Length: 168
Ligand code: MN
Image (tube, protein in one colour):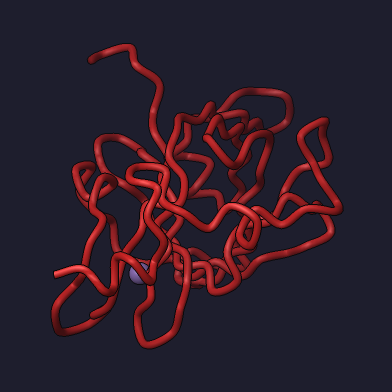
């Protein structure tokens, strides 16, 4: 669908270390970050996001068990929706891929659990894989609730990570 908005997806992944994979559709692939503590609604919470390899768009619907090898463990689609790129440089809109190349992305999520503005900011040079994912201070910010704890289940199937891990 040519004019459909780009998607985002967040997969909770019980690999050797539990983390959340944050993925944004950019030019036909899912740009991806592993977020050890997951996203927050609180603008004061700066969440480390480690840039990882791009994934195919279709992977955004994957939920189940990675049987073996790197990343082995259960995967749950924790949130999914669309986003709008809001990035500007000196008042001029910039494309999502340019914003990421610059190390400064700003976008609005429309998910089932997460809504509102978020920034992704690279620590330093393009070779640096470390970014910070931070909620913008807007009407969707929430200093009190934690959807990671309050809404743990899959947005695709309603299952918990434990239920997925126990399934064959
Ligand atoms: Mn992962």
